[in-house]
Length: 113
Length: 114
Image 1 (tube, each protein chain N blue to C red):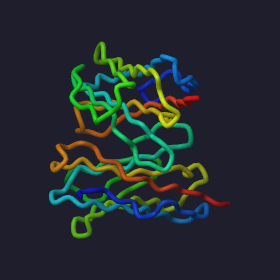
Image 2 (tube, chains in turn green, orange; image 1 turned 180 degrees about the horizontal axis):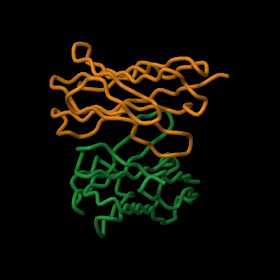
Image 3 (cartoon, each protein chain N blue to C red; image 1 turned 135 degrees about the horizontal axis):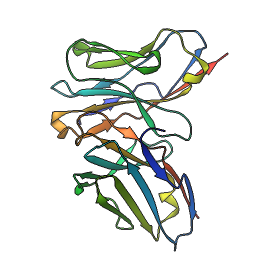
Image 4 (cartoon, each protein chain N blue to C red; image 1 turned 30 degrees about the vertical axis):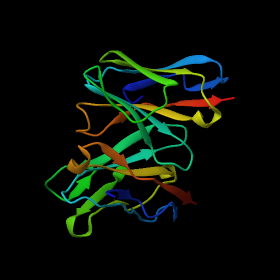
């Protein structure tokens, strides 16, 4: 247990489904991140939240919609995904944005069929 | 383009042998430097980090890394590898040129043979 908890661990969804990924941290961190990890590709930063405000959106398609209702929780809402969106989605947190290294969750393995 | 490079896609080491994983960066000012490890099916775990000061940094699980400014390198080392060290290792930097956004290398997969 790293202090960052992601649920579910595995998710299989059809292209017309709507689902959400959840991330929770009780480390007192002020920044939270969503990363996408695909096979044979470097980690891709998707979204950054600092003090519950979205501060970065790295040209992510609108079928991915983040939500940060409070400093401890981060969601990634998914709808009408494509098979190429299948990947490991990692949540991370840090004390402040990009300052002290990240604490990662174990990820959600997403398969789009 | 500014970047962080891990030249080795994969490395195989015998159990008990020493290990060195390479990492180079191309930023003018010294960035913050990190090494992470990812076991299969898991998220990344921070092994160690360098911000300033002593250029030899000790981390968890018996790992250390040495910052060499002249070579723009931050190589990860372990004197004696255990089978449980088999994993993927990521070097990362946070550079002022990137607004301290963390940039990850492509990773090095470590295989440990008996």
